[in-house]
Image (cartoon, rainbow, N blue to C red; front, side):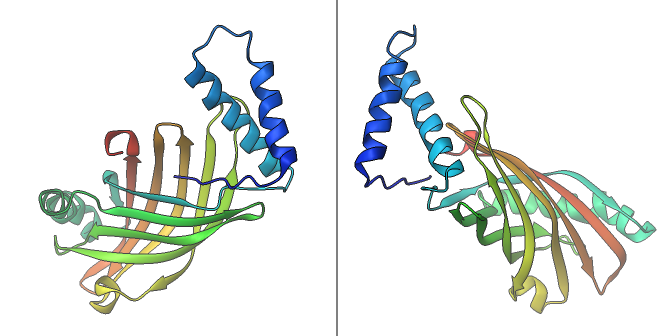
Length: 206
């Protein structure tokens, strides 16, 4: 998921030093390596020397909660949004994809989401995003936070349906990425704004 390119002899020496420090612990070689990789990455990233050059994820995101600020949007949640999600689940296994470039100053990239709407159909949306990447120390997880900066017109927006990312937080773990995102949806056929909260967990799909 992340690729580290280590070209400096100093970095190689640091890796060997970390390995020697862990030699006395009662852990397996695989556990030692995972821990050492996380410590090395956190050190290099926080020092501004090196960072992961990309995070790419593709998997399934499910709606945890649907709410609205009008009678129309509240009624549409159980009747149309839920039905749309059922149809989507039968049609498309993976409805969330994001690709991020990572540097010491943050993350930038795109988020692609196929989401149901107020007519029980679903549409693809491609959003430009940026945010922060906070590497965890030792056994702590890395945290990705994103906000929307733009949108590429796709079938949803061209058909008069709109989706906006209002929050995104994910934990990057050795076994995958787990997180939650919130979007607001609007359309010309329904009065008001709906809020969809999605959960995703790549441990089930990677």
